[in-house]
Every structure is written in C-alpha cells, then in structure tokens.
Length: 159
Image (cartoon, rainbow, N blue to C red):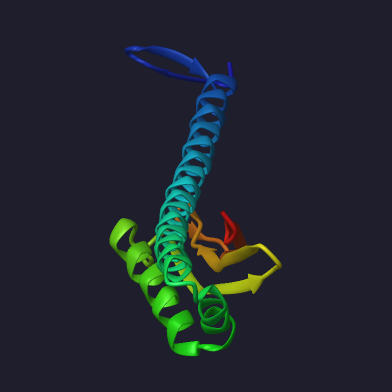
C-alpha cells in the first residue's frame, strides 16, 4: 500500500500523521493566543491598580484642599500646573513598571500617558498606552501587532 509507512513496529497512514500534525499546530496556536490574552490581562490589571493609586492621591489632595477651604486653588493646580500633572503621570508610570515588565520578548508597552479632564464636580483621568506584540510561531516571526489601550477613572470633588 502506497499511503502507509511500515516498519517492524507497525504501520501508520499518512492521514494519521497529518492529523497529529494538525492537532499539534492547533494546540500551539491556542497556547500562543492564551499567552497573549494573559499578558493583556496582566498589563490591564497593572494599569487599573495604578489608576486606583492616582485616584487615592487625588482623593487625599482634594480632601486636604476642602479641609483648608481652597478647593478652587487645587482645581486650578490640576488644570494648570504641569508639575502636579507630571508628578501624577510619573507616579503612574513608575507604578506600572513595578507591577509588570513593560518590555520583554513578547510585547512592548510604549507611549504611556495620563491625561486629566475637569468637569463641574468630577475629575476624570485617562491612562492610555500602546502595546506591540511580537508573534513568533513555528519558527517564523510575524509582523508585530500594535494595539492602543485606554482606561478611564474618575473622582468626585464634591462630598
């Protein structure tokens, strides 16, 4: 029979060989997909934890400002003071670095930014960053996949 491989241990059809190969490739793809999803979840959770820290710092600052009856000066700081915004942004980036590696063989987290918007009774902050995934499968490097991520948080300034 031409479609069989024979030796002293038995024979196996080509169909069986290709079926095993296809299952192996499918499992490899599923594991790669799961790995990317786990990395996404880890990065998102690190960003959410750092947004919680930003919220806690803003809460402490607004509470202190309200106690001293100078909330309007605090609001001017958050709207106009680049030093205060940069301090919050730097704290956010350093916190993310401490929670998750921002660069490794599988992905790079770049362009991390934290912006603020002031509404009448609320401060909204938006963390945004780009994630570039390096996909390598079956000995081949595929073009990197780049995704933009945004997470939003807010803090009420009126109690």
